[in-house]
Image 1 (spheres, rainbow, N blue to C red):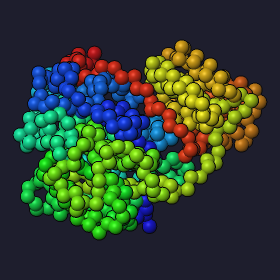
Image 2: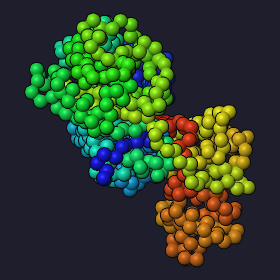
Image 3: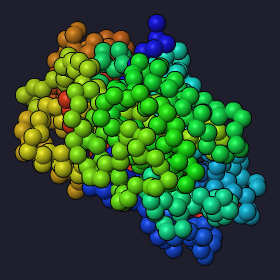
Image 4: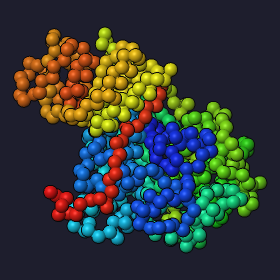
Length: 612
């Protein structure tokens, strides 16, 4: 039965205020940095206003820039796309790479996509701008359904593709929907997360009328100075698999999700008012679903809206849930203190924080926390807010993550460390020969290919680098795009020299072969070698099969790495998973270096000129 199978987090990526990657976010949590700040004039210009009624926001840089080329989006369509679509595309790519996959080589994969999205400021901006009513790209450029659909389309994923809107709980609810789909067998791998982008002043005006925005420009959950939250934007995506599948595939497992629950408040003090009873129900059900008790929980990543009513009700609900706890108090925190309220992406931000906590043995201090709120009965609450970052010293680390929506939909997920999961050694790594270890690189532009090689040089500078392991990771993850480079290297010095040459002379001409491919080698390939190469290159045909329009690729030797290098450089489609195994012990590699350029709807030619 799969209805209770745990779900493994095998990949993740994010762009949040002050944190352009998961590694940046981990550093932010350790050091207590805050990513929110004054509203920059450039963003006011994008919004078309001179001021906002707030002192601070949380923003990601260059929201008006995008690299359309890896996703093969046309130059006429890309500027019109909601930046929420563009952020999700980029983070999905990075998360899949973090999961040990090449996003460019997943066409036809039964992968689900579940993305939490609420409002679209971009659609509101487009609506008040003249000149776009006749553009055929507009419907899919602004509708929220296309946020998830665009990922599936651009990457060729054939599993379910759903946009989830439960307001502020959208991101975490999307994760639970993905987990349910995996358990039901609707897909074998799933991307899930949330996104939010701030482009229109109207949202600030409306929330200001509700008295939930911070007048001081800081988000202080559970703190005496709490006076509301700072609005923020960003995106987070995780890659999920059923735990048995992740173990069988030798995936690196960041954390495990054993259970979760969602539930609506029902009739309460108001649709947007938080409900103590509703929160108690959903947290209790999530713990029951995960098979854990209040004494197993070591930390709660709270919704933590930093509003007087929200924090008071949330802590009352937690006090009720944890009333029978016998162990010392658990840690209480909210990522909103560091990055503000990401709204539809708030829940995924909290989940990624919790994953980092259980994975890295870390209990982060709450950014800016000084004096506990006098509105909270701390004596009745067996939880405490850490003042500084310290180790999480427990053989099995378990956290609960809450996310509550203004629509009344509450969500809670349980996150466990992966120590209980046996880490099996990979069965096979790409072969090394007299020619050395194989490195295959690709990109969608010369600048990105150059930066890919620079990323490789940084990895080679690591004193602990294992050349065999690094070559397998690069070859597994960095293939599939149209600009190709590659080499074989027997030593780190040789690899550095080859990567350095790519940075100074990146390929300028794209190569992409379509149809059958035939290898020409000095000596005939062995049957075993040909079978292996066919698994990596499904378009490969035997030399004695007749040409039948096959493109001939000449290789200096018949050894598998040299043949793979020749096929790669010629533009053949390769599935390098056939010749490299996932390695759960492999270190992190940076995500694809997107060659972002200004790409904004106001620069789009009118419809009659766009088709010329």
